[in-house]
Length: 494
Image 1 (tube, one colour):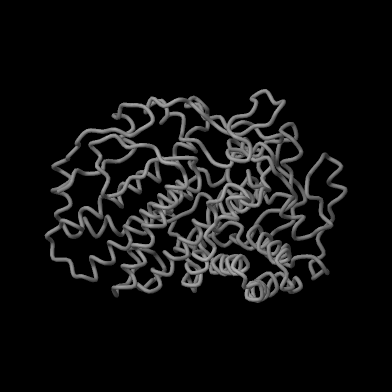
Image 2 (cartoon, rainbow, N blue to C red):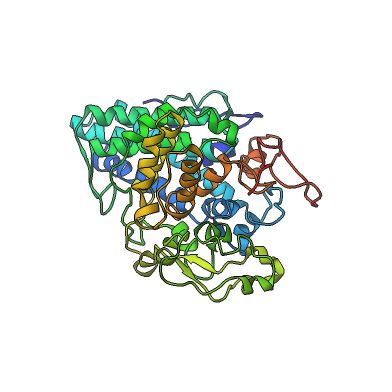
């Protein structure tokens, strides 16, 4: 069997050389023995989607900092506060930083999960066990799917990283790749998953996705939706966004999901720290930027203690120009638990309550990918490829009108673009990790000094003997500025 691709966490501690990944041959005889059992291989395959879901939804990750950096959520606690400071701080990428575990945890969890997917692909190529064609296709499709998601999310989140697949020779030096290469390779892996789904018939049972059952055709659609998401949300600025292959996005999204991707929580193996901390009272609240989007009479920023005089108890009925979801999906608060000395700009008088049932039972579906998100990608791609009327029709049939009570948008590019932005900030709140950050980033709306992507974690830079670097910050602050303006940190804002 080809040399096992060992966990990146271990690799980084034994590699040598600069600006690259370099390891020796680490064959493990126990590994080959363990994976000679059908049940073990099936179990490995069945755990892959869960591993990825936990990696991106974990508290020890970047889900919450991304939400706050986007001015979609607001919080004055821990690293979540650090991501939302005003003016923005340079990101602290030192290994000694008290909250460094969130960047490191996200990065390493994705690579560990990627390693598991790569291992499984090699096992399935060489196993002599009598799996049926359907069983082998199902496991291979899942491994390709997760390989694509891990590489794609590394590309969406980091400035660079290592492309490692089941074909990578781990006995030689591996160069670091820019984020665009990670995106390309991630989408390529998802294409392979789609091809497998289209050529085979199988079902993903509850062992793979609790509370759900996805047949091969539906799973192929899910992979197609994720490919569209990765392409749409990889742009670092408006210039990148204009260069997105929108025809390709349109093709992926039109062949995307027709139902929500929402694994059922059991609070043991399947759970979301992101949904919990982003929504329960007293932790993250809805940023006033989003509140103002739904009700323009509300201030978009909390200035000082007098801002309380500018907010009024909501009238629980439809008001012209007000998004009705402010009454159904969000909850008005009569106080704010945040510490005044950390800045009134953290304050808000709203929280997201659409997932309150999940917070109550911890055994509800967790909406990682709503069908509406896929619809909005079709609309955006349609807009960019000359199908303006189609784009308007999609928006006007969406929750913006049916639940929000907002007037239909005309077949006008600017109106449609504004509506898509509104929907991603309001309707897609607390679904896929990073959606609001990626949306604000590609529209040049992140506050000045906000990092546009994260650096490879400082602890890994030390291990790999790479030069320390980081991004973000604003002129005149004690920390200063790091990176290239508009490329590594935002020079825009709202």
